[in-house]
Image (tube, rainbow, N blue to C red; front, side, top):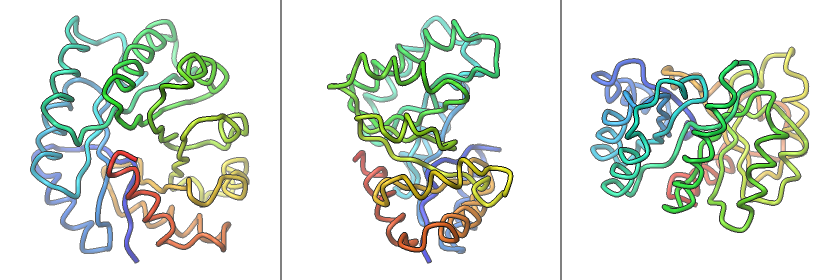
Length: 234
């Protein structure tokens, strides 16, 4: 079995190459490494530059939108210009936090930059699909490919007219997440991705098993081919 982890994170930039090599020995042949704040960008950009099997996504996580620098947009644009393999992420909206106004402002700015550079968007959305889809609808004919990370199963997102991939986390194997599990049956098989959402990339194998237990017509190779399209910017 071979896997691409569609959404993982740094624990320590200095040892991530070693982490990836250990994961590779378990069949994890690629990963998309997501930032949460500007402090991650340089490390992720370098890892992406140095290893063809690591793709980076740089952006501002909605939890950290109130700590952005005044030059964050210029810094983001500079790194995208210098590294064609960088995606945008993770960005989005999260209604479990009370900084929603700053979230929207940063999300829209990052979205417009993603459109300008035609880079895949790694999207974080928690209890905010109605507003996210409303914003995306304003850019309907310009949107690049979107990865809905840690997808929670919202039907409106599945039905939305855009090139959206749905990435499932290890929670898919948890009986508590019934709506998420049910959505695997409704998502097109060519739009399913798997992720660890962790610095422990081996957790993506748990996700793969969880998806396979629900969706017998979707093989690990099907998911691998889906991830390759994302890996190479659609």
